Image 1 (cartoon, helix red, strand yellow):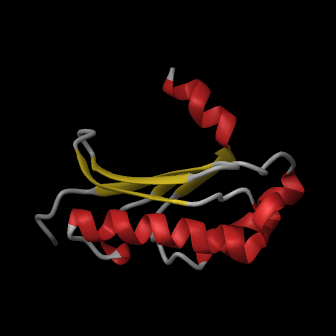
Image 2 (image 1 turned 180 degrees about the horizontal axis):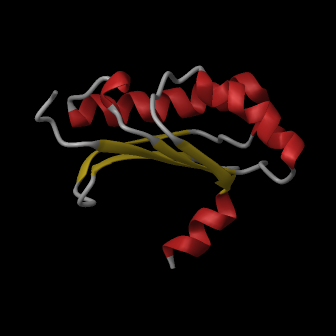
Length: 115
C-alpha cells in the first residue's frame, strides 16, 4: 500500500479554453494546465480530446505524477447537454487513462457549484 496522498483531477473545458487542476484530498493544488477550446461541438471529439490531454499533461508534469497515480476525476465539459452527449464524451475521457471514479457534468454546473 502506498503512502502517497490521494490526488484528483478536475477539468473545466469550455468553448474558449480548457483548464486542468490536480489537487490532493485536502484541496492543496499540486499542478495545473491550460489549453485551447474543449467544446466537442466546436472542435469535434478528437479536438476535445487533444485539448483535454494537453491540459492534463501539463498538470501531471507540474504535479510530478503519472495518470495512473490519480484516484479519480471530475469533468465539467461544455457541450455535455444531453444524455447522448455523455455517451459521446465518455470514450473521449477514457482515452486519458485516468483511473478511479469519475463524474461528467456540463461546464455550467461546475461553475455554479464553485460559487
